[in-house]
Length: 75
Image (cartoon, rainbow, N blue to C red; front, side, top):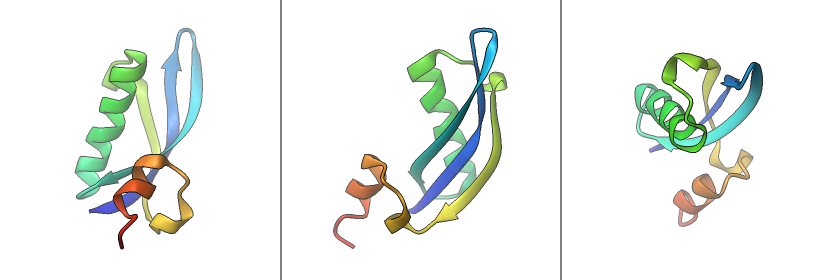
């Protein structure tokens, strides 16, 4: 598993909202799926309204996201 940082925008009503999201995924395709799933479940945004501008692998120590810290805590 690797840590990824996704940066982009999603439709929030009539406006586009910028976001930065750190996640843990097995590969880039899984990371994209998790980003879409996150906004779909939390904000009821269809996948076509979630734009991922950049998706890159990061060092887990750079992140402050709880899910990343918890996953890499023992390493």
